[in-house]
Image (cartoon, rainbow, N blue to C red; front, side):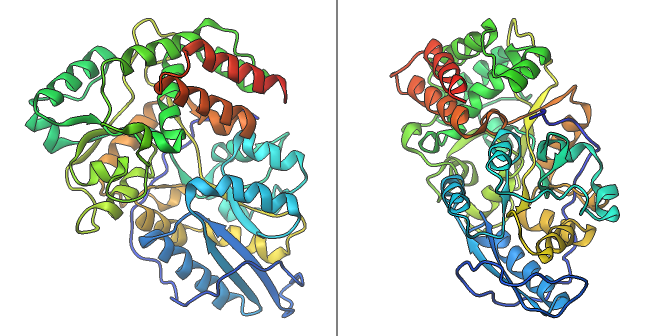
Length: 436
């Protein structure tokens, strides 16, 4: 699977979409009859997404209702699944040959595994010309396997450091860190002010592993990253250096107390909740974070002092300091799904629905025509860095697929817990890659 490439700036936080709100029945039911050429034959589809609360959950309910109004023969049954449970449940469900009809596609190696299992629809020739033009070719790269497209992007999700401007000011930090030396200095000032420097949801594994991903992005050259994506070759010394640099940083005790048992996004005690309630100053996360944080503030509104800066440069690193890591959330159709499934994917990618998506999730939409009404300062900073990035790499656990990704994430958590070393991370990844 090719790495994701930098495309046109894509963003909007916007005016509400005129969607007809309606309740949707629970459970998941397979499609029964395809609707071809506007046929009135009844079609029932199941739809799995990961927005279990708040505006995001409501967005999908409203969007499905609007689609059903335009397609009165179609019924879509929604199932909202907690993000951390999605991959495992989806893998089991697809292997069983049944539901869901429409499901989250994270791209990269994870999507390639689903393609290899013949469980997902090739949508290359079914994307409407309007949508294809509005999204642009570049953003489809994460959903492309062997030259064919298998997923419809809904968002652009580059990662970086979210922080509280108020807590930085309280600690006497006047500029955002651009190097790890500066980040260490900021951590020291925050501790002196009695503030937890960095929130980390280590319980969920992937947020801890993100620290290794970004270290690798800074320590490894673009050529090395590309080679690893294509061949799963992790022999370059930079992979070990990334672990060693992370281990050295962790030894300075920069994270919240109990970070290995802290969840990432569930409740006020999560890492996102700590940012939302000014219990910690920083969090390394993707561009979905402002929306998650807003759902966890006391008034359920966007955090007014939320800022963002790129992951700092690493001394001696071979990667470009402007490079970013991220991905694109999207949705796919189960193999042999009815044509109404593709109708739904084209529907959610339209400008008005993408504006509604950006508003609901407080994130960056895939449709470039949905830009122009961004008001969130943190997301504006993300977009500015995205525009200037030398290249953008896909999240490593997504890029390398389920088995290698799990080994990588587990190896990082073990090192954080004092049960492994940087060399163990590389060894675990090599072992998983060798097994295919």
